[in-house]
Image 1 (spheres, helix red, strand yellow):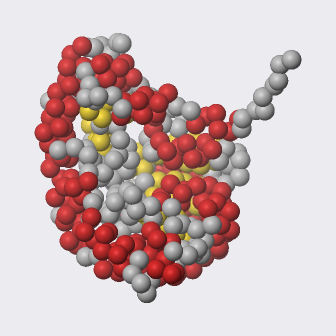
Image 2 (image 1 turned 180 degrees about the horizontal axis):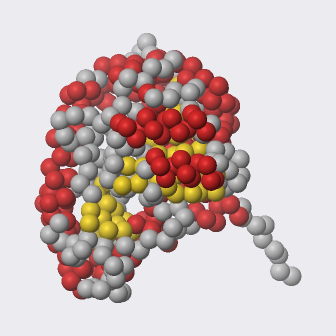
Length: 400
């Protein structure tokens, strides 16, 4: 007698992605050079500062509280340190507006649970971060993408989409965007905030890359500066300190933060108290000017190497971004080419990139690709681009 198996949740089926399976497989291939991942360069980790912060967190007078369960909204000391950090970005906040999370991904997870019901519309950038797309899929949201250009999200297109689709949320990565590398201008940040307030829409502002700027000036102030009542800010220490320190936060109006607390409690009770204690000590003592200078020393030259090198490699008629910060370069192949077909050739030559199709919510794309500079030196970038050039030569019309 056959025994029927109980079904799996249908809402998780959309998370299975052949591109991500290819990516995971590529990481384990001997000799493969991956330009697909956003893994940070260990040379940029503040090992000394983090080690000292953990030592303080586990000192005899601190260890009893550090090793105990904590509050779902986060420790008062860490929330106070985050308030100071946001003040440095010209975004005033109070401790009751901060909820500490286990990384930025959990921050978005909390917001999806607190703000969205199945079927609610979410407006996203075209393109946008693949993991965020998957989180909205898991929330059973209806995703509508909004185009932009070299100055980021287009406010005219955004308002038209708001009027037509009546979204609950606008999700944006305004600074050194993943995957495009673009940065929303000051004027457009103000416009996005004004649109959200006028139409009664939440903006989720995701800013993991803010400190990774390569010019002389930092990025414009966050959108949250323009509309604290409508903008919810996600921050993280993953890119500026170390990805292994799983500490992020949500800055939201107090009524939203209060709604997040029971969601957080239901999810994991609280973020690791050890990590929180170390993060608090770290934030209280870090010299951000020195820290961002150290990060620029690690990432500026690889970004320059990628931008200069890719111009010599891509087929005639291609285009690509020249980011002022962040860790990604976005390229578009000319008509007749296929990024998926090129990826197959690139893998044969020992090089992996992320095809653009992974980053689009509701449109087809087979001409774009994302290249990460984050865990590479100028020398490995030159070798990776050489392999890509050989793949391009092997597939002159993009056919597999």
